[in-house]
Length: 111
Image 1 (cartoon, rainbow, N blue to C red):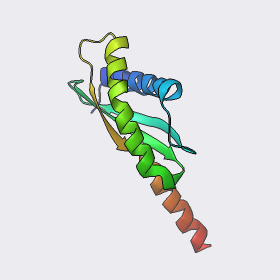
Image 2: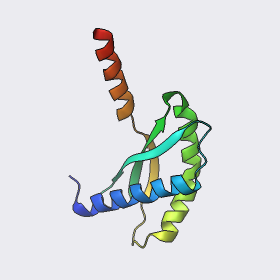
Image 3: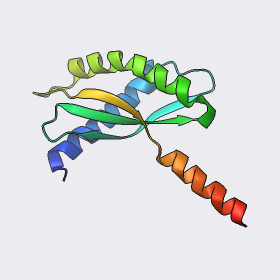
């Protein structure tokens, strides 16, 4: 069960990381990368940022680029956020979009 504090930290991290992506990240050509949501552990020491990458055929290159960019993100968060504990960020692919696409394709094929 998540607390109000972990939800606040998660939303703050999501906003800050998306701002850094807009400002500093050079996505692979023809790729759009954004943070869908962030989860934070109850002790606030770890966070997982779930990445959405468009188009689907650029998932590998987009995820590897954002993981390299992660060092920059960690430094900037440490510098700009005034928190006692700065979560260590882990990057994961947000697979919800892929599942939604599979469901849409299954519905279209059943018609």
